[in-house]
Image 1 (cartoon, helix red, strand yellow):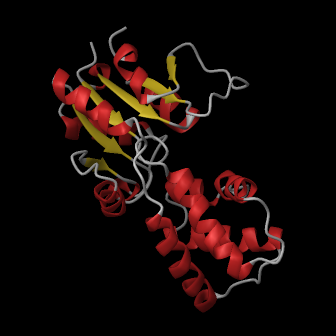
Image 2 (spheres, helix red, strand yellow):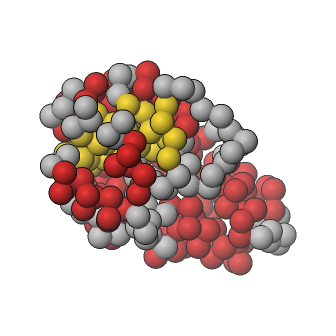
Length: 232
């Protein structure tokens, strides 16, 4: 029986993909000579071929360093200047301003929380971003009722390490076997949660039928399906 739900934040509760699209097209207009479509630009950024963000979530590099590396790699691909520290700070001011302007809750997020409240199911957030930053994001999206329980700065590293899931369950007050974790990344969200003893739920909003998923992971395409997924 599921008695509690842990949520990822980005692209689960919040449309972070849309916010990135807005931020990237904003800086691209000023910095890039070969500007691709917003979709390609966003895909390149989120793919992060150099693996810098995941290195950050493993505690190997800092947040600023990972974003600066990604920005310079984006410039290398699309004809932007190589940025030193000062140039990057100016770039990041523009990027972050536009990024925060683009923060929006997914259309199904508030209704999902309303239903969990009605069912008396506890919930909270576990994210691979910093706690204070995600609290700001959730509040900006009208989701401040979701407590940020564990971020990448809580232990100095994040998902898929099993101990971050265990700590989030402890803070939520429910054992892993009675807790579901919902996230948009199959490997570090649903599969990692299942390996940590939770019910792993993969939120595949884009309906990627080409990607299979293990039998011990539940797949949903919307948060409206969460009730069914947590009462099986």
